[in-house]
Length: 363
Ligand SMILES: *Cc1c(COP(=O)(O)O)cnc(C)c1O
Image (cartoon, rainbow, N blue to C red; front, side, top):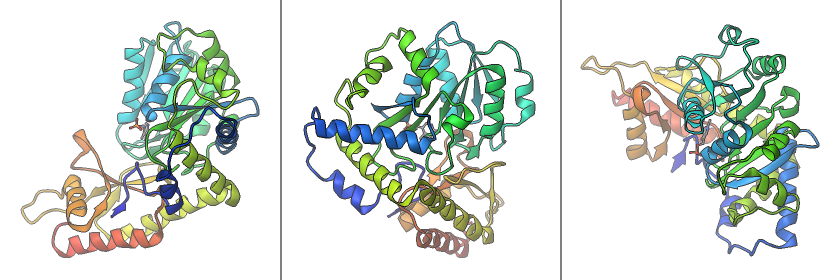
């Protein structure tokens, strides 16, 4: 099996064998030390400032998104949400459910965020900005310099979901003035799903401390407090945290830029090789994490080749997973991920399978 999905992704041998070990008791100085090391390395790789804090939540990325919105904002705020696909829609829904006053900037599928989209919201009394830096559902990477400038000028609290971008694209938390950034274990961290990480700058920490939230599990005050001694309020995903520690240390050994380069090369190699096949890349602005593809071929009966059907055939007949889209985009787009334990030889296998499908008249 080769998995080009955008999470969970392929894990390397060392990480998989760590997952097969017995799980140690965790209220110990040893586990606390490992957690402090995880915090230091997560902050470093996010480009966070000295005073930032990293918190570890057991729950998938959406749990971290919910915790972030719940703890950072109240009904006294007025936030802007960028919605260019299903993950932007999730932030919008969280604001609805948690009753945070908000307005939404809707973007067409595949379109980049531009200066013109923000102009109408300058000086309008907003207090926060919510964005998924890489909108994974459509494969659009937003311009963080543009967003950072807008937020600085308007003094907005900036919350960034970098779940599918962290380690695939460079992230500069402090330089961009990001208040809270979050990520999940099953994307470019290439670990099992179930763990999410939030990195909070000073202003976000202050907001968390000042706000009362109607939740027990998602009250980040307790995570801040217990995190000071390398612990969490509730039983964490201990084995995934041990795998995280190994993964972060392995990245540190080679340097963060080597890991970023590895994923960038994996993406560039694929984008070069796919040129010979009947696909169009459907995003104005790409992350190195994935490539969204639209099949341009037409079947003998005159119907367009279905993206979802390509996903099914690759899965059932070639043992290769790509990432299908849901809803209105299901027949138009599928995505190829470049995160995780993949190599250029894996790209070759996918390209050969697609060429074989082409020879069989399926593309
Ligand atoms: C994967 C992902 C999430 C998290 O989804 P979960 O299924 O809850 O892990 C959130 N935002 C983005 C941009 C993602 O790519």
